[in-house]
Amino acid sequence: MPEGHTIHRLARDLDELFTGSVVRASALQDKFAVGVAMLDGSTVTSTDAWGKHLFAQVAPAGERPKVWLHVHLGLYGKFPHGRGPAPAPWGQLRLRLESEQGWADLRGATACELLDEVARQQVIGRLGADPLRRRVDPDQPLARIARSRTPIGALLMDQAVVAGIGNVYRAEILFRHGIDPHRPGHDVTPEQWRELWADLQVLMRAGVRSGKIVTTRPEDRPRGRRTASTVRREDSHYVYRRAGEPCRTCGTPVATEAMVARNLFWCPKCQPE
Image (cartoon, rainbow, N blue to C red; front, side, top):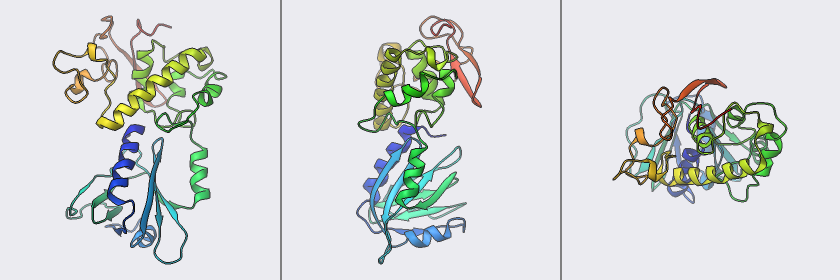
């Protein structure tokens, strides 16, 4: 499933392609036929992202009020896009948007719907703080974490606690701060949480810029491949998908187990109980 940095980057790209433009909407399946009809000929007025949720505000043609296109890609959704003429449509195309600048094709999304502002706020109200949004108070998720017995590794995957973190950022941010993912939330100190949050903001903002997740520090990457643009995928992470391989810091084999239905990775020595 795409993590929050991917959705924020997607919102930025769609803003460049569509905001301020009248869009043409079409599809190759009937699942979103009513929405396609309303979007066709509308004007995109803004795009936004909160966690793993994408929103594009549109003003339909005529006198109808503005609505929000809400998309959640889920595990299988794709939203490829580009400049210039769109490629020939194919497959289970849920929604195609076209403007003078470019195109975007949505397939396989968990959610694709039109919402009014009240419904949009209801979606946002179910989400936790997003590290990629401005003026977010890290003490908001801390209030819930500090009174919870749930392992911090599970809390970080709860979108009602922190919106946008997925399996990669969960594993990597806990390693970078030496926190055992099994530690109960109430045993994570406020100081540890605020340091983790600040680091998470840096990493996720870098992910928006580069379009990929790189969590290793430059000094822990091979010589000649220490920038985000040159680092190889196998050198991008400390523990994620490195089960059984030696920890980059201490050499201990990286451990793995399932936690909240996703594979968890950690170093038993660098992240002691």
